[in-house]
Image (cartoon, rainbow, N blue to C red; front, side, top):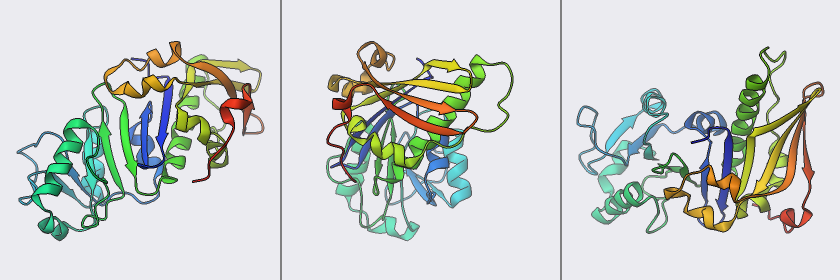
Length: 259
């Protein structure tokens, strides 16, 4: 599978993002409040601590949590964060069943945000490496996307040029993320494999993806490029360290929504 594309689809009502190419490292770099405790919704590891009330593996404290998340960075990650370990005692069998369903079917039966847990996230890795992440506060995703796009451009540039960047690439502005919201709600692809370099200017193709690729769970993500249409470009100037959105199809960006 290609590792030089980023796909984003946002569901506003569910506070859900379906993405490909955004890593757990991007996620941790982007969110301001790091999870302090998590339950793993995946296969139980008997060598790790198990919560007796839910039957899930649990990781307590930021150090344990970060070690767990980064050790699984390229693997199967399904987890939900929680506030305090004593809150797990009050989980009902129905709530545990809902969380089991989240980890197995990669979707929610009821709201995935539990009052008892006070969770901010549910993070699910799909069979093909795409991710479904529920954000209690959806704007938290803006900074995650910013970090991911910045990282991808850095990698793409270094693959095209043998020498290192003199200055690190400036973070993709969250104000530009907001300008892209209508596109992201419909499904958008950032194609870093097609990066163009002209002097100090880098250009990344921005495409709109058909709704049918929402079934990304079972499909090869590279199909996104073949089925998508070019609607704009992102430009970055190495000298001014400024990002710019170039709109080629204005209708794709109309009726922008405020979150």
